[in-house]
Image 1: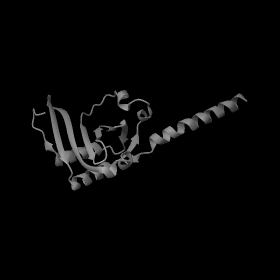
Image 2 (image 1 turned 45 degrees about the horizontal axis):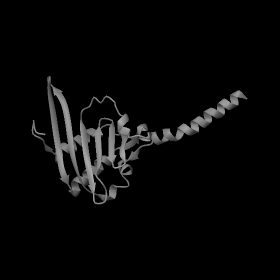
Image 3 (image 1 turned 90 degrees about the vertical axis):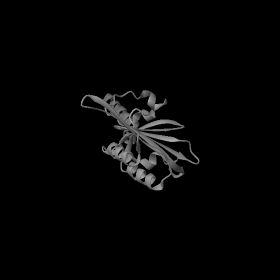
Length: 171
């Protein structure tokens, strides 16, 4: 009898935990992350910071795309962002802002941030760091993990192609 209760308890526990595991394991396309805003985007801007140490000397490169409504650039960026799927982070389930619990040690110091604007929506920021994508809107911050490990490299190449390089010492 005791063994039967134990089996039933594990089964109930599995039924409670399985939806969270499935929710985390199955990735979503980028368009699904912004589905309620996607049709409203009319422009975007972007900035990239890349810090490195070369031959013992620190170096920081920065590229910027000023506010743009260039349809070709937006389509290329959309295709780039759709080239990966995105997995949810368990911190998105917390009742408080997910960013307040994110204190991981990131060794890749490349950061790329895009801000999308629309006629009917507030600004939405999408921030890429190695292994993480943060999406910030009026409701808070959500964390995702891209399934394509080369995504940040491709975004860096996009920013170098379309962005203006900031002069050294300029802010």
